[in-house]
Length: 282
Image (tube, rainbow, N blue to C red; front, side, top):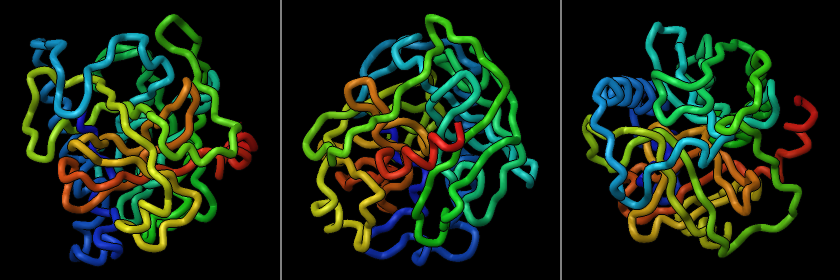
């Protein structure tokens, strides 16, 4: 999978916030990525020609393989539709990236959380909510504290819908293999796929020291993964989970402005840094 991260144009390239390289509204996630991806994914899902072949950098997921995955169909104040991901924590709570609700330029008015489905615009259990709690220090200008808790009506657990535990470990996870999951783009130049559906990729966690070579000033509240071999999260995957040993260790936050396939690291909000804040809201 080449999930590139969804906050791509809000990312930090060559140690400079990407937003400083783009004029005006083009830097905002929903306009730059989410709205376009929503249209592309919806159009792709209207076909039924799914295959189980490898995709660039990763694999298609099977139903129930990631039962905590929650796709987000986002209604924006402008009337447009955007997309993100989330991870289920309880029957009534999920966690996502703050920029999925408010990217600094576009405000959401409702999330439709989609559980137990390989497709985003159809199938599964679908629950609407306007109850989203952003981290009080979320700063879209520098992309810090990119965490939000989603509250929604009660959803029953099934074989295909179960929560994920947040890591309680203080480990930095440097060098471990982790998996990212999402409905997003599978290459930088991907068009409408005839086989678009949930996919996942295995990524190696790298130290913040290494990540600082690309993203200057990166705080310890972030966790990074290597982009070696063109393996990455990509447009549409923001807010989705990064998992190690069946525990949530990160939330997709941002990537490099040069794209998904050029070997640059990706950045996630580090769950261990926000675990107490999240627990206080579930």
